[in-house]
Picture 1 (cartoon, helix red, strand yellow):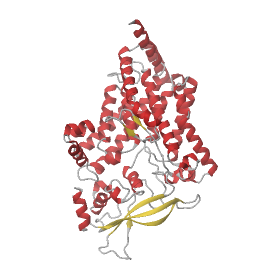
Picture 2 (cartoon, one colour; picture 1 turned 135 degrees about the vertical axis):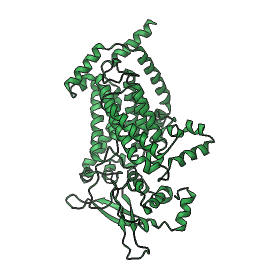
Picture 3 (cartoon, helix red, strand yellow; picture 1 turned 120 degrees about the vertical axis):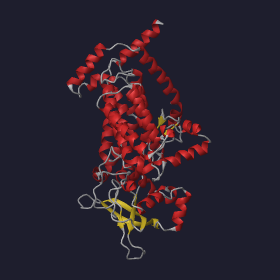
Picture 4 (tube, helix red, strand yellow; picture 1 turned 90 degrees about the horizontal axis):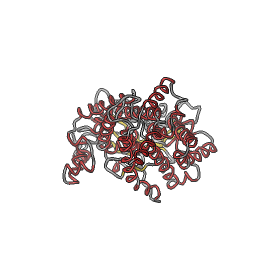
Length: 509
């Protein structure tokens, strides 16, 4: 009994060096949650609301039908929206998430509040369909789940009486390790350009949403791109191992991993992924490191809290239970990392508690873009005048500067990037999107930059495929483009075949 108590007290004492670490982890998590819920508040209803592009009600009904009952659906796809789903409810739900996230960002967090945010965001992800099919969604859920156990149940002060549990700090390092090693291995096993160090010749131009800096990086010398790729392999495959090492090694690993994510933030618009990925790397730092970079008043508060705190055996017992659960759930992700058929961004449990990650296993060599165009002409001819729809972030008009939107994510822009590498049959939502544009649907139009038909809807809409390349530095235009061909034929709301197809998918509204 005494040995067990001594062990818990030693664990508690180790956590006493991470007051500032917990503070910055929770503040950055609050920021990421706030952005994620803000994206949902602005885009959930247009994307998955009733009679919208891919209605969530249809999605839940389909799951219930496939599994035979609502209770089976709840177990397979846990979400609070099984208990009710409306456009108004979606909006209130998302804005509530924004407000609660700002409370955490302001410095006030306890286990109850973080559990509520986790359950709310999981509910959104699990009805978000393709719009929420990105690796950072399950990564935010895993990060948010671990954070629940980083702070007390009730006490929400920035420096509560309860010490940070050291085991949870280690679990954050384990999360960061899997994120980076998973990304490194998927590259080495995937596209050969990662092995011959040429992937970055193409990446900056072909990534989902380039930013203005991407153009300058694209035209950097080839030797620079090769050095970058080597450094990428070192950071993803070597540096994470040192996050479990002694203090100096951990601090060096943390600096390397965080600065790598900052460079990625500068080089492109990868949503809130890189901000989120910094969070587990902060666990590499203890207060002896962070005190050099944070305000003196904050450091004094942390020192005072460390002096006045006592061991919390309940907190440490819970952390031990959590560590056992994570160890058990890590078996499948570890086996996946060791497998030659590694899966990327995959969850092995319905709650997305412990997942496997990866990024850019393949890199496109060319950038194709779908350009949606409409016309007011009632008859299409060689003289028909087409007007292009501009989106908020994806390339369109070659003279428009690339957007700078991250950590915000325009989700439809991302999905159109994927669709340009496939056919309309593989992305049937694009047909419903066209139908909405043909009716000047206000919510759908909120997803794009402008409406070229403000007075009356267009008579026809088509989608054409263009190949884009960055224009050389010094030219006025940002892009050069050439037409490849048709992606969707001209469609009108009177087209019988078009209406029949939409009706078959229950999208004719």
